[in-house]
Length: 394
Ligand SMILES: Cc1cc2nc3c(=O)[nH]c(=O)nc-3n(C[C@H](O)[C@H](O)[C@H](O)COP(=O)(O)OP(=O)(O)OC[C@H]3O[C@@H](n4cnc5c(N)ncnc54)[C@H](O)[C@@H]3O)c2cc1C
Image (cartoon, rainbow, N blue to C red; front, side, top):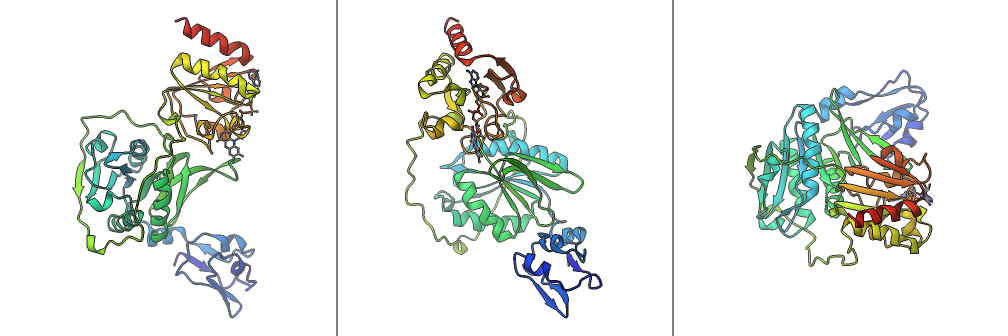
């Protein structure tokens, strides 16, 4: 058992009983008694006990839940056979994690006639598990949930990652719930504690005001979703090879309560910020919507896209599709020019992996300068027209 009550220390005060979110603690003969069935070893009872009478034995728990798990898995998201870019980004981070853990990096692909699967190796995968069947062409989440759960139970990976895309956000938590393990959604950073084999999963929390690093110490696999453009893809290495493992499955046993009737693209999203190599973004420092012509002119001179921080969207100066940041888009262009943007953590969450960041701000202490490759301290109303003019004259 991974959790123990020291009967000598326990006073039967019942504070653990009210702290247990799952109602698994009874007070029997003035002593706490914990039912392990259903216990997630969350530790709420340990914290509630003032007498240090409850102990989670991490090593025992690890042996119970996790020691025979190996490998880092990346769920290969595809649509109509085209692999989504977030898969390649996750393979880059997965490669790092697998190298540290000295284990294999595996891509898991459930699809039908998926193109360019060989590229999984180029981007870092050692193995590709593939189930190819028309049932995975329809986008019905239930069948993905059932099969991924089955594969995880069979192969026991240590870590499983998926994109925080609409599909990943919807089906992946169901996989974690069935496996009775933890999932950290929308991570902005992943790291590994190599000694303890713990995935350190960082994401904004409390309304984005702090960054929390979350671990899943006693359940396996450790699962996380990551927003597209958070990590950079590796440069593909065409010389790399991976083992392709084609798997059978029991199609008759697969049932789905849902059916995808139609896919309607959101045509209001005309700005494809995620794909732009050059982005010029304006913030509250622009002062009023009319001044955004400065941003559009500079973006035009660079053949780039126009973006903004949250205040211009809140003020109705620009549509939401232009917003970059924690509650907007995550972008990773070659060049990001931030004009009149202070560099709040919620904005940085959406753009700090850009290759080159240029900041224009009249406050030399603005936090944006801490992430900027080049900083111009000055009045944007003077600096930006000069830049645009210079670029147009090239
Ligand atoms: C839960 C949550 C989610 C959020 N999500 C996002 C998000 O997705 N994206 C986002 O951007 N924000 C987000 N925010 C808001 C965020 O906290 C900041 O308030 C916002 O990023 C600030 O925008 P800004 O930099 O444009 O404005 P400000 O912080 O007001 O900065 C304006 C800057 O312009 C400079 N400036 C002013 N005049 C001039 C001038 N003439 N020349 C040069 N510089 C000038 C100032 O020095 C200042 O640094 C979120 C907040 C919360 C709580």
